[in-house]
Image (tube, rainbow, N blue to C red; front, side, top):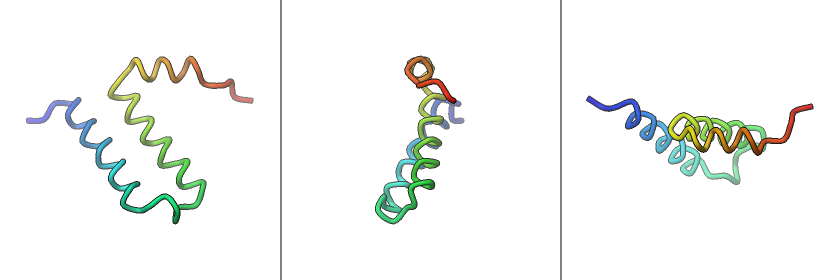
Length: 62
C-alpha cells in the first residue's frame, strides 16, 4: 500500500515528465502557465513549508 506522500510524489513526477515529454516550445503560453501552476500546487501539497513561503512572497492580486 502506498502512502499519501508517495502518491503525491508520484503525481508530481508524472506531471513533470508529461510536461517535459510534450516539449515547452510547442505549448501555447496559457497552457504552459496552467501546467506549471498545477505542478506548483502538487509541490505545495507535498511540502507545506514551500506553500507557506510561496503564499508569503506572492504579490497581491488586483
